Length: 445
Image 1 (cartoon, rainbow, N blue to C red):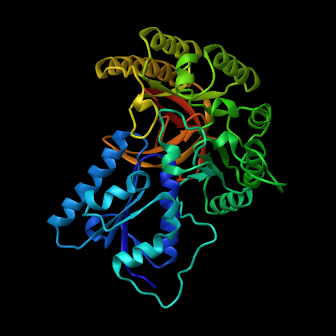
Image 2: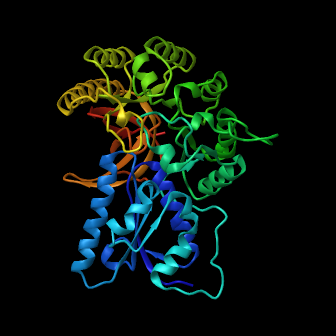
């Protein structure tokens, strides 16, 4: 058994968090120990993001800063870079980053034990233990990746080139992971993937059990039903909102009426240039249908600002669409010309100053809508999952999230400390709000 210590650093989205946890589980089974300071580690595993050029820069800067710290210290800590940056730039990295001992692409991460053994010179007499369910989650919330890769090839996005073609996990493996997580005390399951709505579409032949996302979510809900666990799904594309899925969300108590649909834009010409479908009219009709079918539904979306060729009028059209739809949460991103994508070579690249001006306008509107939606919750009573305890100037307070707040994305609920532990579900009355945050008091049963 290995007795080396490892520090894990994860950059990017929740999907990367899942990948890191999978590697941690494999390495724990192989005898590696986790530490939380670089000074205590024999090696550091950095799981990187390369969705945007800024994310790539952050990944490389983090790696170089760590290498500098190691050079200044007395401990010979090895650095291993995993994830999207090696997947996207693998051939160039060994020469560009000699400080890194090994590079591991996303499709190589299941072999992380062999990589770390080689990096640290560990020899084994027998193969390491491989856990059946490769997770180590100890928090109240667990992200469960139901697919990887993407077949959409949006003209602005490099994900298909980094993660490969769409690949659905089997329902059997997903449900086994969900049951294991719930048995360990997880109170919310969040299903994620690059394009969750088409889960199962790549299955061939006859399929036993769930064959699409709606059926999978119902099966997950049935698996968690005895344990009072929430089920949420993120990253649905508009085309994924089938009648069957809408009915599953509406009619299954465990599935939260929270829908995350990244529209990116509403103008038909811009969407076509993005290699996406839809229009202002079609998207408005979709959201009207969702709201009529799922009362009280919460909607999160994404707006991509400054796409090549976007005119002032088209930018204003997107702002008017956001305002009219009144989204609860909107993530706003300025367009970034990503190497290897078709949009990076398009004519009509929007000047940076105009792009930033449009981005600020969209962010201001998104915040105005989001803050108002949050403030409208004051006076309501709802269940809140306790996520942790935070030290403040006034003393410790409980931090949690309500059903209408996706973890790590939409703000939190702040409570005065009471007799509660992480994972408890409390009935809370919201008494105040600030930005996306809510203040609440526990309602006695």
